[in-house]
Amino acid sequence: MKASQVSVYPWQQAIWRHLAGYIEQQRIPQAILLTGAPGLGKRHLAEVYVGALLCHTPSPEGFACGSCAACKLYQANTHPDYLTIEPEESGKTIGIDKIRQLIIQLALKPQYEAYRLVIFQPADALNTASANAFLKCLEEPSERTCFILISDQPSKLPATIRSRCQKIHCERPNDVVARDWLARQGIKDDAEQLLAMAQGSPLLARQYAEHHFIALRREYFEAWLQIALGKGDLLSVAEQWQKQETVDLSVLLAWLASWLTDIVKLAQGIDVAGLENPDFKKPLQALAERLELKRLYQYYDAVLKSRSQLATQINKQLLTEGLLIDWSQLNNH
Ligand SMILES: [Zn+2]
Image (cartoon, rainbow, N blue to C red; front, side, top):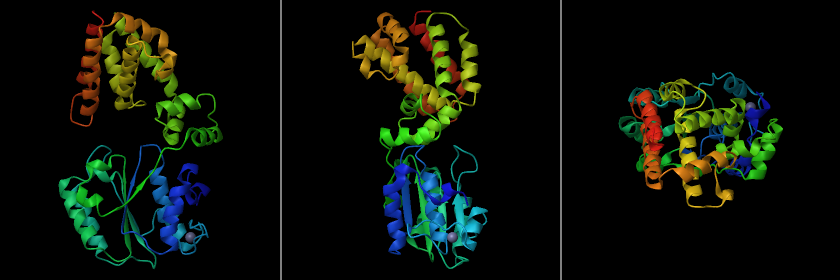
């Protein structure tokens, strides 16, 4: 077992003490709802907790030993008392078949002496039918079984499920802790900007660094500026934005929204210190002086609306094209 699998991230110490307290007192909640923004390592925390509950000889801090028979099985991902419930494909729901299958498995005793653990991720992907079926599992507890529901958007879960879970919320680390951790990953110079882009989530910031998000953000901004100037082929820009796989379209639209927010701030004479994109101040200022505020607000609303439509079956090519055409028209082309 890797060292990382028997310890938690620095910003998870307090939560870990809480979870370890359950183990120490042998008061394991039947269901835990683990919430918090993406990129904070919720899954990792859940897996460390699972490892600790499966382990035959955990350490005094409550972590798995990493070397007993149970740990070996868990490490090889073959422990029979550890189950995961996930959608077939990312973005899809967790179908009722998965829950029916789970109910059959839960009817049997756990195979080992310790606990049986089931991770749901993302738990908010349960649809109405599967959530109702799962509710029965919560209402009629099975022997030594603990469910861990992981969710970035817990409000999407039915209240009937939420109310039956112990809620544990992962907070974003403070800047010092986050930067210190990033520095130990070899990320120093761009740490501040990456953390800002990742809304303070260190794991997301590291992922952004690995995929050169700072350079990509600049590239996308330049293309968007070109369209504002009436240059560049907006259809091919739209195609490129929509086709590339590195930057999720929802992230790109969030960038777009933040550029617009800054233009509005600049148009209203708000202090530069409050800008989300201080590095783009000059071109944003030029746009602020030129564009009509009312139409900017409308465009901002359209960007947010498009962002919320991404989770639906909408044609992403048309959506991206529409946004760039509107942007071009807003600039009077
Ligand atoms: Zn062990």
